[in-house]
Image (cartoon, rainbow, N blue to C red; front, side, top):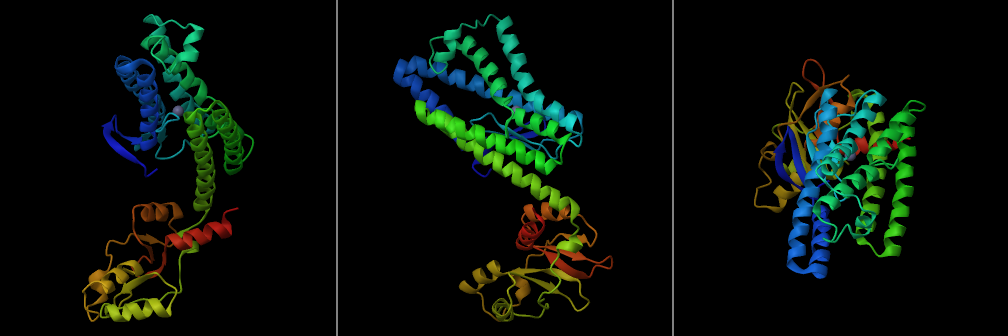
Length: 356
Ligand SMILES: [Zn+2]
């Protein structure tokens, strides 16, 4: 989710907005302006901001319920389909996952009830005019909260209903298989939404379809990867045959090493075998195309803050380190000698070999 930017922190979570959320806002605003002029556009702007607040409240429903089980939510991203609360980890027990998933739609039901108590009517014709100012702000918001709750309860990934569905499947089968079933349901729903959107000429429905399809697929992939990661140790994944550089090697020597090996990352080891850092092919190429003399020490372009793990460390820790941008993770003995290292590329190979 790189197409998003931060709006700041609320209740311990960073609130991010995906650019396509603005497409939704723009489409709603444009539709109102072309049918009702400026006053309609202003009312719709207020409406959209209120809707935005309801979506945020929905996501905080998930985040606050997750916190009850000791799980933090580092960020919440708003998408046209409602939003994604990225939990630091998934609840261990399926029933906890059910409660976390249900907490979001429950917030929309509560908002709906409050709006009804405050006097929002529910005439059926509001349904057909949800994108115009005709039915009045309160009625539209009441309907939209019901729709948000209903849409999110569709039992297909990545909707909340899909999570409930997956959690219930987990009681009968393993998590990877359960996710695959829920994700497949999500993709079937996405295709149906896509056709519906195309047949009525509604670009928002098509957009939702694309999102649901992609999200269902990536969740399935992510869960499969995490299950591999959980049973593999650093020792099983590390590269043990490699060419290392010494602190006295020059850029020219490093360049020779790039040509004579298939490595993209070269550890720099001192005479005792302790790791000083990594010289990467990318950094070397940048240095060679610049004005830096080739007789300069290779250590001058070395990445020094390389995370180090023990042989029996789980691969999850390694993945976290790579996610934070390290070119490699060093695997060291208790005495501090590097015996191997792990890169993104060899984790990719491991997935192919052990993934399915
Ligand atoms: Zn939700």
